[in-house]
Each structure stands twice: as structure tokens, then as C-alpha cells.
Image 1 (cartoon, one colour):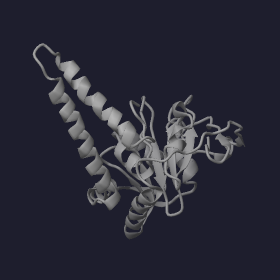
Image 2 (cartoon, one colour; image 1 turned 60 degrees about the horizontal axis):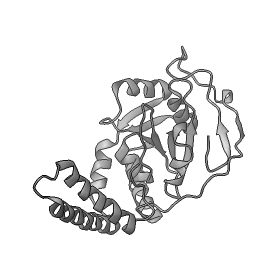
Image 3 (cartoon, rainbow, N blue to C red; image 1 turned 180 degrees about the vertical axis):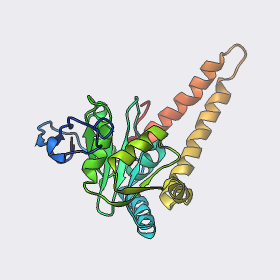
Length: 246
């Protein structure tokens, strides 16, 4: 389901895990018009320019290491590079990055949320999950006929999913990009530093609310609730476009 181009991507009859030869026929998944009226994208915590900077760093690393594409799967890197923070609910999520494209892969349970919460430079593709492992079909649909190196986060991908990636991408060498991306995240931009300062300020407000709530006979959960409520209210005032209590 290509949320920002008005198409629905139907699943194949087989998956990389269930097909005996591990092959996928792209013609088995025709596109049909998708007439649902989509909501607008909303401003995120960081600017589109900040996300472009991060993606640019990844692409530079890909050029240096001869990596054709990266498939990120972790909460932190998908959020860091696109702005979308997923809730797994037993399903797989991804972010496919090439030199020309950046696409969030998400399960149908999120509807239009992945696209709404992603940066302007990211596309969004929603896969249906009424057949097991359609996530890997979505990966292949974004990387048709790919050969060479594909980057994965080895510290996030399970052994089971690693084998499925090998089946789905038989002509590719899988290479770790988890550690290089962690090193990229360690170097903060001015925009990131400003957000960290704001987070510290809001944490101080929560701490002060905790101190004020402490008294003889006040349960611990009431003290904790005072702190979190104060911070949630200040986050809402300072960053009105971010998700709260998701």
C-alpha cells in the first residue's frame, strides 16, 4: 500500500519463507487504485533538513563501503532516520534506504500514521499481513533485482529473520550497519543539542513536581504521577505536534 502515491500493493500467494525455491514473482502483486483520502503530514520533533542530514550521512557510508541498500529494522534507527516510531505488535517494520530512495515499511495496523509521522523525504509502504512474512515481500518490492551488499543491523535482526533476509535477497551479501549508524548518532547536530536542552528543562519541571508531591502518607504512585503529568503537560506546550501517550 503506497500511502502517498494512491496505490495498494496486494500480497503475493507465496512468501520468501514459504516458497520452495524462495523466489518471488512481482507480477503476482498488481497495483490497484487506493481512493482513501489521506491526512496531511505533520511537523515532527526535528526539521526535514535534519533528517536529510542524517540520511546523507548513511548514504555517504554506503558509498564508502560499496553498499547498495540498507534495511533498518530497529526502533531507534527507523525513528532517527525517518521520524516514525513504530509499535511492533508482533510485526516487522523497516526503513529501506538507497542512494535515490527512502521508504518506511509498516504493517497495516498503523494505517496512515507512518507516512504522517515521517519526514518529507521518506516514502511509506504498508504491507498486509494476512500471510506470514509479507514484510520480506515488501523489502523485495523496494529492491527488485538487487545484487551486491545490503546493510542490516546485526545487533537488532534475529537469527530467524536473518535467514529470511538471506532467502529474500539471494544475490546479496549482508553487511552490518548497526555499529556505524550508532557512531553517527553519537555526533549531535545543533538542532539535536537544542532538543536535548529542552528535554533537560522539562525533566527539571518533573523533578520539581515530584518534590512538591512528596509528603507523609502520599503513595509512591501518586508522587510518580505528579512528575509525569507535569512533564507531559510541558511537552504538549513546548512541542505541540509530537505524539503523546502513544
